[in-house]
Image (cartoon, rainbow, N blue to C red; front, top):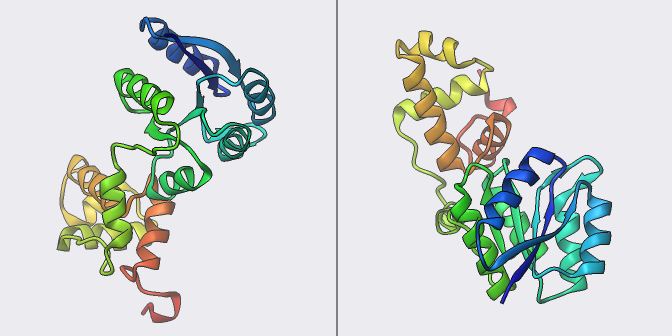
Length: 213
C-alpha cells in the first residue's frame, strides 16, 4: 500500500531533496507540493494526502497554522513538522497544534522517512527523537544542571560577546567555546542564542535587570 505525501516548504531545493528521498522508497509517493501556508492548506484539504511534511517558517506565516488546519480537516492525516528551528518551544508547539512527528532538518533522510511512516500509521501519536529529554527539561523544577564553565559562557553570551571574545576572556580555544555553547543550547532546549537567554532568564539562571550590578 502506497503512502501519499505532500511537501510544504518554500525552498525548492529542500522539496527536491525530500522528494528524492521519498522516491527511493517503494511505499512512499510525493503527490503534492506547496510553497506557502495558504497553498499548503488549500492543497492539503483538497487532496488529503496520507502524510504532510510541513516547514515551520514560510513566507506568508507559521507552519503551525497548516498543522492546525490540516488536523481540523482530518484526524487521520499524518503531519510531520520539519524545521531548522528545533528547540523545546517549537517541539511542544508542534505537539499542541496536532502534529504527528517533529524532526529537525539536520536529521538524516532515513529519520524523516521513518517519521513519515510513523505519522501515516499513527497520526495522533506524537514522536520526536528529543521528546524524552525535552519532557525532562520541562518537568525539572530546578532547571538544567550547568557546569561552572557553562555558567561562565552563559553570562558572557548574555553580555553580548561572540565566540572569539568569549574564548579570549576564558583563555580557551574557539572550538571549545563552540562546544560549551552547543551543550548550553542542548540543555536549555534552545535553537539559538535568543532562545537560550530567554529560557535561562525564565529559569533564574541569569540575573534579572534590577539584580544586575
